[in-house]
Length: 306
Image 1 (spheres, rainbow, N blue to C red):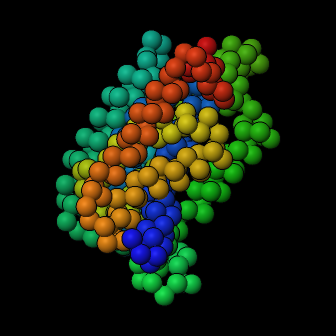
Image 2: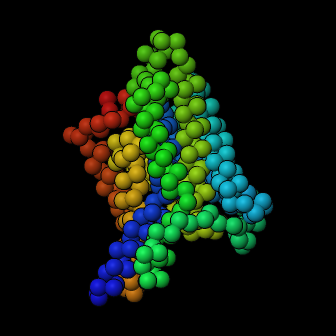
Image 3: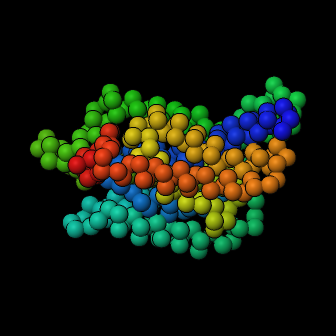
């Protein structure tokens, strides 16, 4: 490889981490908030797909990508709220309910999204970070989603809220000890429903990024399992919103290796690198499920740290 190819490859991976990692960032932040309250939402795949369809439809019908983003966040919040309400009932299992709502969300998205497969919707504007270069490939690779600063700000805000605010303390307390929360007179179900709904709203922003920026269209295979990967990503980030930024960038960069090789002019074997995010997910699950390792930072009510 020539020096120009190496530079293009590096820029492609960095730019891909900023593009591909955006849905991972929002979905992992949403799941981090949900799990901090002591509830796991495996229905995030359905949330992601439904919000992606709703965002695309909203942008297509109104002509505004930002209205589309709001529609995606609202759709994610509604489906997550349903999850929170169902899980608050006696004898209802979080995991089973999440799987059921994952199928519900994807089914609704596929049904209502049929007319949206061919049309084009207005896209979220990009922030150019590559104007310093004369290379068109580098300039194109470093066009980042305008929602990236919002994702970073949300991560910082969640980290600060968990550490410094009464609201954050209540969420953490509900996730660590339901009995202590009830003893102080607070509703565990209410806290978890609110956290799950807010987490779904944040995850909905990730769905909007899928259809309104990268890849920028609606189809039934848009998410490629990113909602489920985000659950493992939260474990990898040790339930820390700030670490979710690095974890999302890592997974985004891993998913961008294949396209970056193509942009650098390397066509052989690039498609094999598309499996890297899934291999990383398996490795994380194997490492974190080892009984010899402690999951530091895990909310006790999830049952994974007992």
